[in-house]
Image (tube, rainbow, N blue to C red):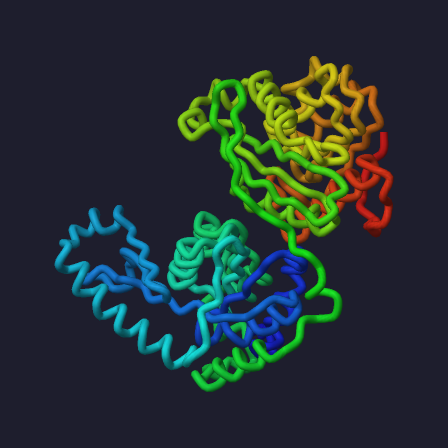
Length: 446
């Protein structure tokens, strides 16, 4: 049987390499006790971030304790899954009885692990929830819910190993799920460690004390973090929600146009935005459609409408930014190409990831902004559409093919490659700064 990690510290160091895009953000790393804390310690040290534990307890259905109908966290946080409560026919008295026992256990465990140390605030920050592995992921799910209830603006769930089906389920709970290994022959977490000795309470408290006493890594403590805030935008009479992330001394602003079935919470687009933020670019992720409009297929494919809204949002948010670029995915890419081709659009550069340029074909000849089309090598139908679009473009343009990538860029490493190509394109065409290193990525030039 293959053992991937020597121990939890080894797993944490390797996991930290997958989380480098979070460096410089206002991050708090929270480990799930007990085994997740040694892993989280290494992640926090690599990111130069504070370390804490996130003590949570599931509130299980009385007749089926493994089925969570809610969760409790420190600081009085209480999350209730009303759908489960209703389906399981749990009465108010039954719920209260279980909750009382769970809260008592939570307080005992918190006191053992935390002692007199204070609970680190998560409000307005990025919470990185770390465990040593995910089997069913039920505790991790509760931790994500509690982190969000405590005001985290973004929740990243990270673990060294988990089965693919668990990772997929947890994508709905976290803004981003980062798992180093996703084996199909998964039986339990311990099988992937040479040393999986249980972590004691004493070890947890010792690691927390060590993390609190450690100085910030050189240069990290003085670097201003990016600022994230939720904003509301009005376009064409629709109220649209967005998340604006402002990088210190930002070189430019990249506005994201999401594809059908996606939103500002898209883990993939958030991952790309994080890389752009690290390169000194501000980003705006916003919903092109309202919640009521999202199920309407006619709206999803009304590229003219989406482009109008994108243009309106651009005019509202571009003030104070040296230049504006567009990053579009799927149908959102068509809206970005369309909007950038409008007279007076003044868009510095456009990047399309897995885009549908055929939906904006009649506008491509008017586009003047330098345009990069990124397509997965295994996404054959969309690749053909992008090759046709490339021939129609009259602006500086390239087609970048990412080998082994499908339409969603879910394959290991493929999204990172696409994000790096987008970063390099914006830095090359958005302004005069050329300080970021360029990574070599297979591409086809026009």
